[in-house]
Length: 338
Image (cartoon, rainbow, N blue to C red):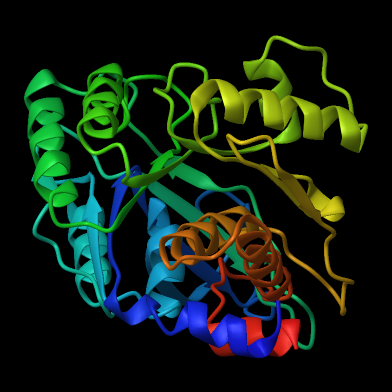
């Protein structure tokens, strides 16, 4: 892909209407100054003095942040937040993100806001060092009333959207947004609008998902097909092609330091190696940048290989952003590619 083709693809981003359905969380960073040392009088334990607190949307919100950084014209988040302080922060952060409209987002007292609280030790002249995270999650099934409301919001948004991203981020099935009821709704959506691009990713694997466009790592691919995990590239390629043909949708497989592989329902496949590392890296957020860029490029008419090249470059941008869940803009991606 040359620069002119890249610009032709990315010039369409501003006109795209994107729905992103999934588990939105609040990423709350607590920046700790290690030079402000204290010992607690009550416990005798060291005190971590927080000198700055910053929050941003995480999980599905990280993909949303990347969509915004790419200049998507309209972004509709479909998910929930609790009626709590973290929910207030999350919804405010989402609403303030350029391009985002909150028409289809749900706030409910029946759920707590999914939160990753990340203490960071800010060493002078060094890279941030993350301490043990403090997470807030839901440990009970998502109420049927919330499921019905989310399914209704999905149907409404899909009537206007050019493409849909689906992210299942929770560890315990049926406690987040992408429950069995929502999977049924996604299956109906894909049958009703066969030409609509719906890209899906799940940290627990995609075996229960209807046949959508899948994005996963190589271990998840082999587990879905019931095969023993093998690292050989040609074995992964054959498995991806097999799944793409079965689902009649493209499949994308992230390969860490080996790059990304894509397969089409017609049996074509492409592999794009990872770009060289340019210094210290932090891999947090790289997979979400890949998802956002695959979605935007494909929805803008990119070929299989072109989408892989753009997504691979975006991941390279993000891994070099330390101490935060970063994003990649069109200009940053262009700089890496050309």
